[in-house]
Image 1 (tube, rainbow, N blue to C red):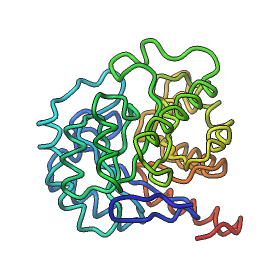
Image 2 (cartoon, rainbow, N blue to C red):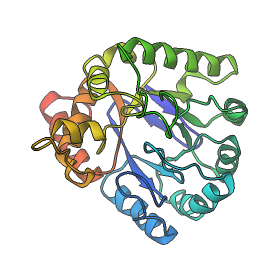
Image 3 (spheres, one colour):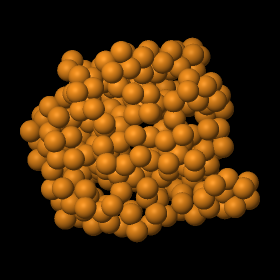
Length: 282
């Protein structure tokens, strides 16, 4: 199995680690730390040095309650970072849902569009389809960042997420996007309860059975803070390293091809142990 992107055909015979670079002042875990382009580019270089296979750069927070930003502001934040990241020898993904931003970053040479809205915004699917070779990640999100945790999903999330992702992929294929360009993301934490997020992990193979590679992001999510709470108080994002690595390993064991993480070095080390002890390709 592989993931076809603009410049790279990514080998998915071993799990890929996608390193997160948030060029935002308000992301839930590291907002403001890399808002300066020079700091963000140093972060990109650091993550590649730690073993990141892919870089995922975002200029707008999608945390619960996050305020939207204009396409112009988003592009201004990410342009210098992207142009530098494109020289580092790994695929570069951009986390955006705006078609204007997608078109511009693809013109710059970006490899992957990572869309939390699964190309539901008007015009976004056509941007990806017309490009001809970029990779795309379609994610499930219930409602939107401003309201998703005020009124999360109800009932069994697994069949709902499965049906949504299947439909999103099918719509894209109708537009001529090849199967090998598409990866699916269940959207852990995006409008889902703790129990629903855990069910998506426990029954993740039901999503993998759709026939597309899975990209899963558990890193520092609030569900992990709730599970590891002490005296009823959730652990803060900075203290969720070990739970994040554990969740990433469980996701890989259940078929995830890509894990999206903040803590690249530790995740890479854990995966090496898993690979060595299971005989999985390295």
